[in-house]
Amino acid sequence: MGKTMTEKIFSEHIGKDVKAGEIIVSRVDVAMVQDGTGPLTIKEFYNMGFKDVKVEKALLFIDHASPSPRKELSNSQNLMREFSKNTSAYLHDVGEGICHQILVEKYVKPGDVVVGADSHTCTSGALGAFATGMGSTDVAIAFGLGKIWFRVPETIKIIVNGQLNDGVYPKDIILEIMRIIKSDGATYKALEFAGDCIEKMSQDDRFTLCNMAVEAGAKTGMIPADEITKEFLESNNRGKDFRKIYSDPDASYETVLEIDASKLEPLVSMPHQVDNVKTISELEKENIKINQVFIGTCTNGRFNDLEVALRILEKNGKNPDVRLIISPASKDVFQKALKEGIIEKFVELGAVVIPPGCGPCVGIHQGVLGDGERVLSTQNRNFKGRMGNPEAEIFLASPATAAATAVTGKITDPRRFL
Image (tube, rainbow, N blue to C red; front, side, top):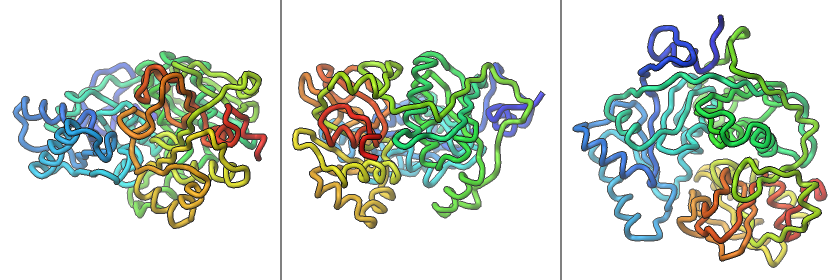
C-alpha cells in the first residue's frame, strides 16, 4: 500500500515506515512563535531547563500587535527580543509581516515538518510540507529538543476539478468546503488538495486553501509540490529548496470529496461561524449594509489579492460610507505593491493602508468596529468578538467580493463589475 504525503514526510523524518494513526516522535525542521504565543513559550522553555534551541530554523515573529498599542504587549515583545539575543532563535520584528507569509517566502521547503504556536501554521502545507499549529508549551519542547510528538493523521483527499468562473476565487472553494464538511468535519485530519483546478492554481492561491484547513478542524492542509511550487521558490531565490513530493497513486485515504469548480459562485461566511456559508445570490437580496471592508491577513493579503481588489475599485470607486482598510501580508508584498503603484491607488481611492501584520484580524489595534457595525473581511475567522468587539458582526469573503462590497456599501456580487 502506498503512502500519503503525510506518511511519506514522517517516514523520512524518523527513518522508518509509518502509517496514519501511529504515535511518533519526529524531528522538526521549522518551529515558530508569534507575539501572542511566544512569551509563554519562552517562559516554559526556561522552566523546563532548556538553554538553547535545537531546531535549525527557530523563529520569532512580532506581527499581532505590530507596532504595539499597549505597554503590556511591548514588555512581552521585549521578552522575545531578549530571547533572540540569548539563543540562536531568529527574530522578525515590527513591520516585517505576518509569520505565515514570511515562513513561505523565506523558510519552509517541500518535505519539511513545521510547527508553530499559531493555528494557521497549516498555510505552509501548500509548499508540500507537513505544517501544523501547536500550543505554546509544545513548541517550547520543540525548541528545546528539536523534535516533538505527533499522531500521524488520516488524510481526506479533496479533488477540485474544472475551471473557476470569473469572480470566483480559491477563497470561495475553501468556503464551499466549509459549507460541506463543517467546522469539525476534518478534526485532526490532513486535508490534501488535488485535481486539475488545483494543479493550475497559483502558489499564492494555494496558500489561501491551506490556510483555512484548520477552520474545518484539520491538523494541516497540503498540496503536492510541483512546477508551480518550484517557480514560487525560485521567485524568492530559493530554487535549491525545491523537491517534488506527492502521495502515491495507491495511497489510502479516509474519504474523498470531489468539487466541480465550474459550478461555484461567490460565497460569504456569515456571523459568527466560518461554516455558516451562503451564496452571494442569496445575500444580495437581503441588502446587508457593511460599514467596513478589510483586505489583508495571512489568508488574502498577498500581492495578487491586492491586484484583484484594486481592479474592481479602480473602475468603480469606493462608497464614501465604507471604511476600507488594506494590510499587505508582508514587507515584501508591501514593497512590491508600492513599486507597482497599487498602494498609491488605494490611498487615492480613500483606503487606509496599515503596516503588514495581524492587528485588525485579531482586534488588537487599528480597525476595531463599533457596536452594531458590520465588516466584510478577507480573513479566516469570524467568531464573535474576533476583531475586537463582540457587539459587531464579521462576514468573510474573497478580495473580489470585498472590493465589490466597498463599491456599493452592501454585500455585493463581484461578477457585476467584471
